[in-house]
Image (cartoon, rainbow, N blue to C red; front, side):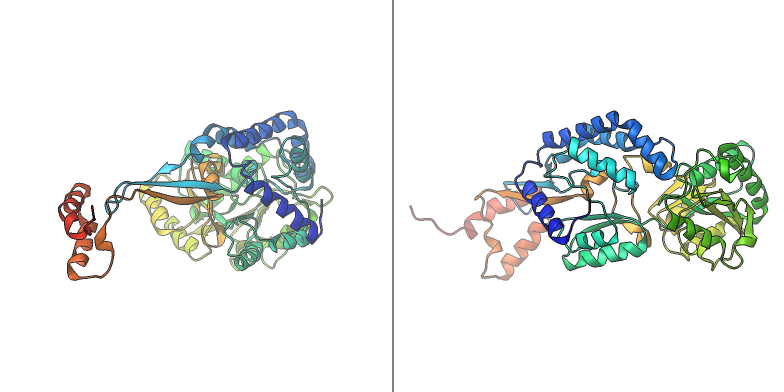
Length: 459
């Protein structure tokens, strides 16, 4: 539902009035919204899966229900004021910090596919189950997004490309609005030398992480593989076997793999393969079905490192394999490029694991698996550098959309006279000493010197 600038301003004003009324801040209201969401998911499961199929040809896998259940279980604890530690310099005080929470509908997990059918389902959820004066879903393209960015927000969460992330951040700077940017990037796999069943498992997890469930159209999707040169032929053959087993051999009859989200991105991915020198590196796949927006899982061996396929996020079913003389060279290879959202390393070598953790920078590191970190609600999810900043999932989502407001309560006794002028050496020495004493020592000091610094009181 596209709206003009005036309509957007009115909608935002209405949302702010609802929030300022305090009606959305109670734990029971929030639990009610989560229960409504779970009810919506249960009653519309078939429609949701059909929307996934229509938009992407995607099979019915999702984690929103799990996230909502997790939030419903923990929301009361998350919202409770927390007591802070005492500071020795102050007595008879109560230190707390309270959560001012802005997000009202974050439990649909930021990052759900912004597709046409999904947007319609969100509109249905809004009208049927959610208090419409507190939550609003707005459909539209870049023109609508530009109008939204002109408004003054308490928080902006964006998931998408670094290019658009820069636009979001620039607009937010005008109002000093805090932002969380989840921008993806080129997530590498480091594949160490394996033998036997461990290698087979590693290849299966790489194939599943690259081409399923989104055909590489995920911010945490595998973008390329780093492997020693002597292992590359075996890797290529093993990946071919997995592709045939998991997805099929003909682009017209592929199964369990998504189509490309739209014609624009289909053409973008095709252009990656048409750059000079890239097509010659294809060792498997490359077929396309433009009518159905399907691209066959494609493996490339040592494409030109200066080609766009190795400098831009692929976001599609193309998998470059880059060979190295020694796997330890992967550290420098990754460090010479923008920081990725995730690094996937398949190795049993503790020294290499330590190197990856200590000498590289990324949003996350997963050893001996891929993509699986996304569904762990107890782990923070987010990027660093060009892959974004901020974090969410589980309690981290709640924290991302909250402001921890410090609250200090004090009594009127005892009064700490050395804090007031006129200053002298004794008062300054006393203050320095007070900062370095423990609680009991400071209490004794204050009681012993109280008469000196407290003015006489008339009877």
